[in-house]
Length: 167
Image (tube, rainbow, N blue to C red; front, top):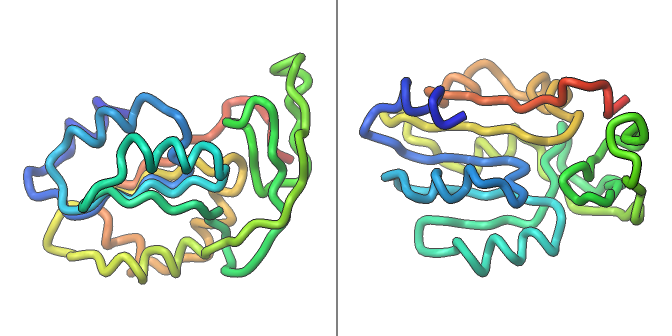
């Protein structure tokens, strides 16, 4: 991801919105960039707390919620390992990771991707970046936003699993 973004990045970065931030090493690299605001969106509360403790500042905001195609409350499947947790109810990890398991299914607050973008008040004159890593919900979320909302971003990166984990 770093190489793709570095190749296209202008010096005038407005906002970076990272949906499904998790415990990934990309956050260290992203936090070193020059930007106006970095939003780290993470639905797993324990991970969101760690992100807040390590990164929260005046221009780095951590939000503990799930991004969906609708705003409201949805069941969220908490997995072990946590990085596979998802709004998707059918998660088939047994072929990929033998020791994986569902820890619990719990109702969580959701915000639509469209509403997240609208609330961000993006400056279209700057390079805004959207990073999506939402474990099987990528197409649902992207199909719920307008073309105008998407064109507010200079870079959109979508991380998807190569194996059919989220049915």
